[in-house]
Image (cartoon, rainbow, N blue to C red):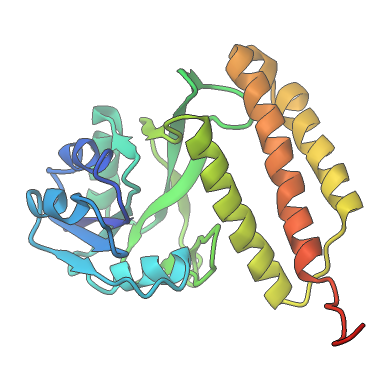
Length: 255
């Protein structure tokens, strides 16, 4: 059974080479670029001739669907540029693909953040469904927080070995990504007619901190755990605040 490693990227020249070096064993590598202005596409072409540019951004889900449509292999491994496949995970993936039983496979993701690997805080094992048969599963069209759909009720199989995730370069990168996800989340909710409130943001933000730092043992991650809990609670509040702002009734002309 053949396997395609699939990536959607934009301006990932600092990450892409290290990622693709851990994927050269795949039968096929597909890179769908969203309009990079750096050397992302040039780097991708060093590893594969299947590099396509589509800058008509319709959200993460739609972009992953477009990438899926470019695949010829029987299995898809969806990977982000800031992730790395470890040797143990590679072996586990090979076993799953060679199995006669099709399944949606989840990968344990271990994130490096602010100077250390995060093994608590609800971040590990951060299992993500990324390996699946191309013709029997696929991503939804969500603007953000897209997920693999399982219309045929395939079994879900946990794999061994970590998918390393180098999630944030620095605090500015965290804040930029957080603002982007908050905006996309609020847009998606507003489009469904949902309302937001500052009180809901406050309650969910406090709940996020308590869950990460206490219930999920974020304190065991040291100062990184405390910082992540504080930042995550802020991000949670921000997305509800964004939704609240979007659903305010604009003033009437002359009002």
